Length: 225
Figure 1: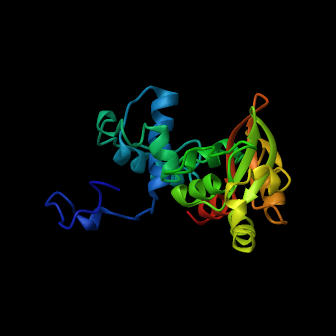
Figure 2: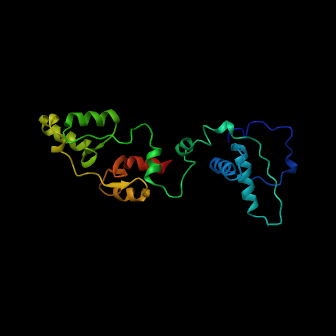
Figure 3: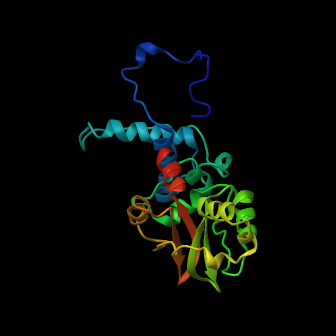
C-alpha cells in the first residue's frame, strides 16, 4: 500500500502496546475503501481501506457484545484516478466480478483494437499486411458485419509460398470457416470450450453484431495476471 510500510519507525509507535498484526492485501484494501464509500458515504482512501479490511477480519472472531473502533487515516480525493477508477482497477486485476464474462476480458485487452477484420474481396497481400501490422495470427472475414469466414497467417503464407500468384487473390478463395461466436455477457468458460479445441479465436457479439474477438493468447494472458 502506498504510504504504509515506509522505511522508518515513527516515534509515536510503541510496540509494547500492540497485541497482534493482521495482514491485508492491496485488493482487500481497495475494495474495502470502495465499499465504505458506497455503503456508508464515507469517502476514504487506500489506507482507510486497509484499516477497515483488517478490522473486519478481527471482527469475525468477536461476539455481538464486543465494541470495535477503527481509525480512518485518509480521504479518497487523492485516489480518483486509481481506487475509484474502474478501468484502473480492472487493468490491475483488483475489480473482478463473480462471473467472468467476455465483456470483462475484452475490457482487459491492451493495445489492440477490439475487432480487426477484412471483407471477402480483400487481397491475400493486404490480409498479410494487416496481420503483420497488428502482430496477430488470425483475422475474421466479415461481409457487411456478418461473419462469413476466417483466415490464419500460417495458412495464407503456406498458400502464397506454393503459388505466389495468390498474393493478389481475394481471401474468399482461401478463407476457412467462421470463428464461433459467443455473446459478450456469456461466461468466459464458453469461449474456453471452443479455444481448447481446434478454434484459434472466438468472435464476441453484442446486439446481433460482432463487437470483439478473443484469442487463446488473450485468455491465457488474462488467466496469468
